[in-house]
Image (tube, rainbow, N blue to C red; front, side, top):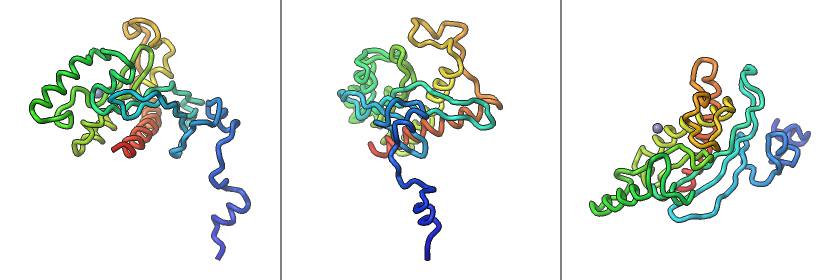
Length: 223
Ligand SMILES: [Zn+2]
Protein backbone atom coordinates (compact mmCIF):
# COMPACT_ATOMS: atom_id res chain seq x y z
CA UNK A 1 0.00 0.00 0.00
CA UNK A 2 1.30 3.41 -0.85
CA UNK A 3 1.28 5.74 2.08
CA UNK A 4 0.09 9.30 1.64
CA UNK A 5 3.30 10.55 3.21
CA UNK A 6 5.39 8.80 0.54
CA UNK A 7 3.34 10.34 -2.27
CA UNK A 8 3.76 13.77 -0.73
CA UNK A 9 7.49 13.20 -0.34
CA UNK A 10 7.82 12.00 -3.93
CA UNK A 11 5.97 14.98 -5.29
CA UNK A 12 8.11 17.21 -3.10
CA UNK A 13 5.16 18.73 -1.23
CA UNK A 14 6.99 18.04 2.00
CA UNK A 15 10.68 18.71 1.71
CA UNK A 16 12.46 15.86 3.49
CA UNK A 17 14.72 17.51 6.08
CA UNK A 18 15.80 20.16 3.61
CA UNK A 19 18.78 22.09 4.93
CA UNK A 20 18.10 25.74 5.63
CA UNK A 21 19.35 27.97 2.82
CA UNK A 22 20.82 31.45 3.05
CA UNK A 23 17.53 32.83 1.71
CA UNK A 24 15.54 30.93 4.38
CA UNK A 25 17.87 32.28 7.03
CA UNK A 26 17.52 35.85 5.80
CA UNK A 27 13.73 35.61 5.77
CA UNK A 28 13.69 34.80 9.47
CA UNK A 29 16.12 37.54 10.39
CA UNK A 30 19.52 35.83 10.25
CA UNK A 31 22.52 36.56 8.04
CA UNK A 32 23.58 32.97 7.40
CA UNK A 33 22.23 29.45 7.95
CA UNK A 34 25.11 28.61 10.30
CA UNK A 35 24.15 27.78 13.87
CA UNK A 36 20.42 27.87 13.14
CA UNK A 37 18.59 25.26 15.22
CA UNK A 38 15.06 23.96 14.82
CA UNK A 39 12.82 23.01 17.73
CA UNK A 40 9.63 23.38 15.63
CA UNK A 41 10.58 27.09 15.45
CA UNK A 42 14.01 28.30 14.45
CA UNK A 43 16.58 30.19 16.44
CA UNK A 44 20.22 31.11 16.10
CA UNK A 45 22.79 29.99 18.60
CA UNK A 46 26.19 31.50 19.30
CA UNK A 47 28.38 29.51 21.68
CA UNK A 48 30.34 31.63 24.11
CA UNK A 49 33.84 30.73 25.36
CA UNK A 50 34.04 28.15 28.13
CA UNK A 51 34.44 29.55 31.64
CA UNK A 52 34.88 28.04 35.09
CA UNK A 53 31.62 27.03 36.79
CA UNK A 54 29.71 27.47 33.52
CA UNK A 55 28.18 24.38 31.89
CA UNK A 56 26.59 26.24 28.98
CA UNK A 57 26.63 29.81 27.72
CA UNK A 58 24.87 30.58 24.45
CA UNK A 59 23.50 33.71 22.86
CA UNK A 60 20.04 32.94 21.51
CA UNK A 61 18.22 34.84 18.78
CA UNK A 62 14.70 33.67 17.99
CA UNK A 63 13.46 33.82 14.40
CA UNK A 64 11.12 36.58 13.32
CA UNK A 65 7.48 35.63 13.86
CA UNK A 66 3.99 37.11 13.52
CA UNK A 67 1.40 37.17 16.26
CA UNK A 68 -2.18 35.95 15.71
CA UNK A 69 -4.84 38.29 14.36
CA UNK A 70 -2.22 40.74 13.12
CA UNK A 71 -1.54 41.97 16.67
CA UNK A 72 2.13 42.35 15.76
CA UNK A 73 3.90 41.59 12.49
CA UNK A 74 7.54 40.57 12.17
CA UNK A 75 8.40 40.33 15.83
CA UNK A 76 12.18 40.42 16.05
CA UNK A 77 13.29 39.81 19.60
CA UNK A 78 16.65 40.92 20.93
CA UNK A 79 19.33 38.25 21.39
CA UNK A 80 19.71 37.07 24.98
CA UNK A 81 22.27 35.03 26.88
CA UNK A 82 21.19 31.61 28.13
CA UNK A 83 23.53 30.41 30.87
CA UNK A 84 23.57 27.24 32.92
CA UNK A 85 26.00 27.47 35.83
CA UNK A 86 27.41 24.50 37.73
CA UNK A 87 26.61 26.61 40.80
CA UNK A 88 25.82 30.27 41.57
CA UNK A 89 29.36 31.34 40.69
CA UNK A 90 28.55 30.53 37.06
CA UNK A 91 26.80 33.81 36.44
CA UNK A 92 29.78 35.83 37.69
CA UNK A 93 32.25 33.71 35.71
CA UNK A 94 30.16 33.83 32.53
CA UNK A 95 30.55 37.61 32.32
CA UNK A 96 33.75 37.96 34.33
CA UNK A 97 32.08 40.22 36.91
CA UNK A 98 31.96 40.29 40.72
CA UNK A 99 28.47 41.73 40.96
CA UNK A 100 25.19 41.41 39.09
CA UNK A 101 21.67 42.48 40.01
CA UNK A 102 22.90 43.48 43.48
CA UNK A 103 24.24 39.95 44.06
CA UNK A 104 27.96 39.38 44.61
CA UNK A 105 30.57 36.75 43.90
CA UNK A 106 31.66 37.06 47.52
CA UNK A 107 28.11 36.38 48.67
CA UNK A 108 27.98 33.26 46.50
CA UNK A 109 31.36 32.02 47.74
CA UNK A 110 30.34 32.54 51.36
CA UNK A 111 27.05 30.75 50.84
CA UNK A 112 28.71 27.77 49.11
CA UNK A 113 31.39 27.56 51.84
CA UNK A 114 28.77 27.69 54.60
CA UNK A 115 26.77 24.92 52.89
CA UNK A 116 29.91 22.81 52.45
CA UNK A 117 30.70 23.18 56.17
CA UNK A 118 27.27 21.68 56.86
CA UNK A 119 27.87 18.85 54.38
CA UNK A 120 25.49 20.44 51.87
CA UNK A 121 25.60 21.92 48.39
CA UNK A 122 23.39 24.40 46.56
CA UNK A 123 21.01 21.54 45.83
CA UNK A 124 19.79 22.24 49.39
CA UNK A 125 19.67 26.05 49.35
CA UNK A 126 21.12 28.12 46.53
CA UNK A 127 22.49 31.65 46.56
CA UNK A 128 20.93 32.04 43.11
CA UNK A 129 18.55 29.37 41.75
CA UNK A 130 17.66 31.22 38.59
CA UNK A 131 17.87 34.83 37.49
CA UNK A 132 16.95 37.12 34.64
CA UNK A 133 18.84 40.40 34.55
CA UNK A 134 21.42 42.42 32.64
CA UNK A 135 25.19 42.24 32.52
CA UNK A 136 25.99 45.71 31.23
CA UNK A 137 23.51 46.02 28.37
CA UNK A 138 23.30 42.25 27.81
CA UNK A 139 20.07 40.52 28.82
CA UNK A 140 20.59 37.10 30.37
CA UNK A 141 18.66 34.14 31.70
CA UNK A 142 20.63 32.12 34.26
CA UNK A 143 20.02 28.72 35.83
CA UNK A 144 21.93 26.98 38.61
CA UNK A 145 22.26 23.29 37.64
CA UNK A 146 23.12 22.25 41.20
CA UNK A 147 19.86 23.72 42.51
CA UNK A 148 17.99 22.16 39.57
CA UNK A 149 19.02 18.69 40.80
CA UNK A 150 16.54 18.99 43.67
CA UNK A 151 13.47 17.01 42.59
CA UNK A 152 10.83 19.32 41.17
CA UNK A 153 13.06 22.38 41.40
CA UNK A 154 14.40 22.23 37.83
CA UNK A 155 10.97 22.65 36.27
CA UNK A 156 10.01 25.33 38.78
CA UNK A 157 13.03 27.40 37.86
CA UNK A 158 12.47 26.88 34.13
CA UNK A 159 8.89 28.07 34.31
CA UNK A 160 9.74 30.91 36.71
CA UNK A 161 12.54 32.45 34.66
CA UNK A 162 10.56 31.88 31.45
CA UNK A 163 8.15 34.58 32.60
CA UNK A 164 10.90 37.06 33.44
CA UNK A 165 12.85 36.53 30.22
CA UNK A 166 9.66 36.81 28.15
CA UNK A 167 8.62 40.10 29.76
CA UNK A 168 12.06 41.56 29.23
CA UNK A 169 12.19 40.48 25.57
CA UNK A 170 8.67 41.76 24.90
CA UNK A 171 9.34 45.08 26.62
CA UNK A 172 12.59 45.61 24.70
CA UNK A 173 10.69 44.94 21.46
CA UNK A 174 7.68 47.11 22.33
CA UNK A 175 9.43 50.06 23.91
CA UNK A 176 12.50 51.53 22.20
CA UNK A 177 12.86 53.92 25.17
CA UNK A 178 14.27 50.97 27.13
CA UNK A 179 17.96 51.25 26.35
CA UNK A 180 20.08 49.04 28.60
CA UNK A 181 23.25 50.51 27.10
CA UNK A 182 22.49 53.80 28.89
CA UNK A 183 23.61 54.20 32.50
CA UNK A 184 20.77 53.99 35.06
CA UNK A 185 18.35 53.23 32.20
CA UNK A 186 15.84 51.70 34.62
CA UNK A 187 15.32 55.14 36.20
CA UNK A 188 14.09 56.63 32.91
CA UNK A 189 10.33 57.22 33.40
CA UNK A 190 9.79 56.24 29.73
CA UNK A 191 11.49 52.86 30.18
CA UNK A 192 8.23 51.18 31.12
CA UNK A 193 7.81 47.43 30.82
CA UNK A 194 4.93 45.77 28.96
CA UNK A 195 2.08 44.53 31.11
CA UNK A 196 0.18 41.37 30.38
CA UNK A 197 -3.42 42.22 29.59
CA UNK A 198 -6.08 40.83 27.27
CA UNK A 199 -4.44 42.28 24.16
CA UNK A 200 -0.88 41.23 24.96
CA UNK A 201 -1.53 37.83 26.56
CA UNK A 202 -0.87 35.95 23.31
CA UNK A 203 2.43 37.80 22.90
CA UNK A 204 3.49 36.58 26.36
CA UNK A 205 2.37 33.06 25.53
CA UNK A 206 4.24 32.98 22.21
CA UNK A 207 7.50 34.25 23.69
CA UNK A 208 7.28 32.06 26.79
CA UNK A 209 6.73 28.90 24.74
CA UNK A 210 9.86 29.65 22.72
CA UNK A 211 12.22 30.71 25.52
CA UNK A 212 10.89 27.90 27.72
CA UNK A 213 11.36 25.28 25.01
CA UNK A 214 14.97 26.31 24.41
CA UNK A 215 15.83 26.35 28.13
CA UNK A 216 14.13 22.99 28.68
CA UNK A 217 15.95 21.45 25.69
CA UNK A 218 19.31 22.54 27.12
CA UNK A 219 18.48 21.41 30.64
CA UNK A 220 17.40 18.04 29.30
CA UNK A 221 20.82 17.59 27.69
CA UNK A 222 22.79 18.86 30.68
CA UNK A 223 21.08 17.02 33.52
ZN1 LIG B 1 11.44 35.88 40.00
